[in-house]
Image 1 (cartoon, rainbow, N blue to C red):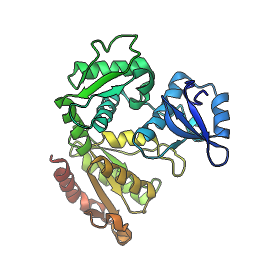
Image 2: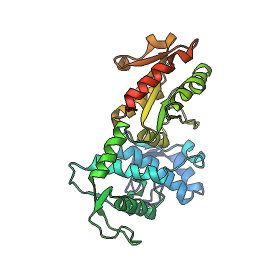
Image 3: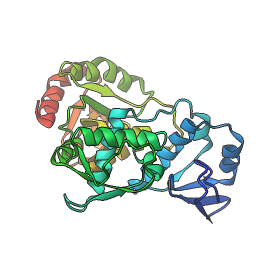
Image 4: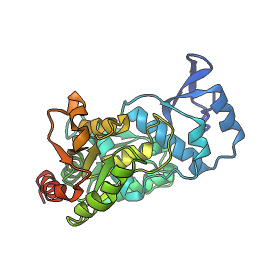
Length: 309
């Protein structure tokens, strides 16, 4: 059968509960699609880039063994707002992919650019070859293939991280790489918290040359966006505000911890006793909505200590 996303003819399907299908595709990996969404995919005039965005989402979840991604109508309706990783992010995704796959430093990992380009969020095979060539030229990887720039590269190539590549991999896990931003996990549209973030947290971090980013895309309840995963992976540190016991903030903090990223927990004073027991043993920076500026010095000290700056 043809994959509903990338249209590859080597996909396989298995029925699951209701009208849902489990799809196994050599390009998109394993994901779930309902009959309704499948019909929408067939009817909508998706571009090559649109399909690459969906392939990146499903493959990211599959390769990270998070859960089989369930394609929704939201994914399709908001495809124009979805962004693929930029070349810098793609290079780091390649390094992380190889670092997780290699069983030992000299263990070569096979990559087929014609099937594995969604691993890094490339649009197609040529996009993957470009990143592979750049990684090789920068001394980040070694390859058994003599010419990665070849336009007819249709075979699997064997790749291994160099010591410089391993250095990037380890720094990307711990947050010591100079990505220069913090990812903020929080509940949105809460006026008091929004005011604290805009007027206290972000300026306080900016004084340390640390940008604070959050993801303001309007996502469905419970939908974990692939872009969010990339933002967390590329961040130096994750700041998680637990004031509203937001499930998303807890999940994002847990995902970052699993990657080896440092996580700074925060909570408004009046809600501090309600912090989940799983984070109770971690240091939590407590801020006061009545005197928000009082925590700036402590916040900056925590960041300096965490990032060794």
